[in-house]
Every structure is written in C-alpha cells, then in structure tokens.
Image 1 (cartoon, rainbow, N blue to C red):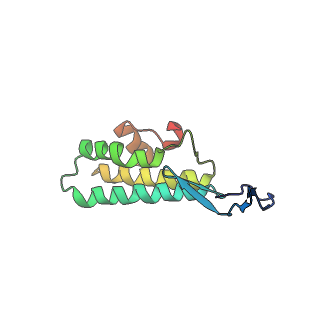
Image 2: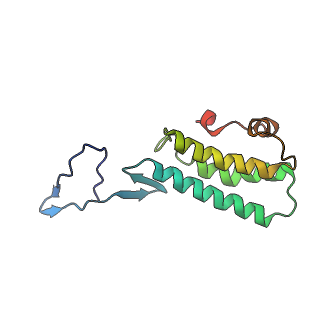
Image 3: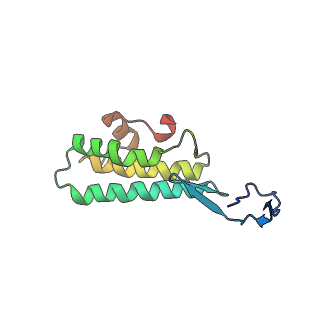
Length: 134
C-alpha cells in the first residue's frame, strides 16, 4: 500500500518488480491510522475514549470521585494518549481541543459539583491538561 503525504506531492506510480503498488488514502497499523490528513487519528481516539467514558457512566451506579478518577485514568486516558509521543502528536488547535473536550466531559462525570470550571476540576483531581502531559 502506498500513501502520499503533502499537498504538492505528485501521485507517481511505483513499481515493485513488474507489479504496480496500489495507492491508498490511509493505512492502519497497531491501532494508528496513517492518513494524509492528521485529524483522522485524533477523531478516532476521541470517539473511542467517548464511547468508553459513556460506558463507564452507564455501568456504574456509585459514582464517587475516587472510583471515577481511577476508571478515567485506567480506561479513558490511555486511549487519548496511545502512541502519542512516538507515532502521532496533534498539532492543530482543532485536534487538541477535540481531545481536551473528552477529558473535560470525563472530569464533569467525576464530581457532583457542576459549578466547578474545567481548570478547577483538574486541580481538584490532580490532573493536568493533555497538552501539558504531551
């Protein structure tokens, strides 16, 4: 599979022996999507983490802060950070905001005091923003 990167990259044909290598728009390996647009991996990670966060919200009746924090740290946050340092790192503002939105909603589930701001909730639970962790 051949994936071209960049906007000014010519879509040349490549041969391996006598066989023409097929052209594709994305390739997925080890859970990381290599795509000519960077946002694809961020959207996939955010969707997966949102599904897990929703499952936690629906499954657990006793939503005390410590339990919800541990569930977030062990199930949701790893999906947002998987291979972020090595294979992909969000650099567009919209991608960073998309991932932070997942953490923002997850921290809202951890507390019964809905009047706390996002930064106050992070401070209360001893968390940092995902951008700071990167």
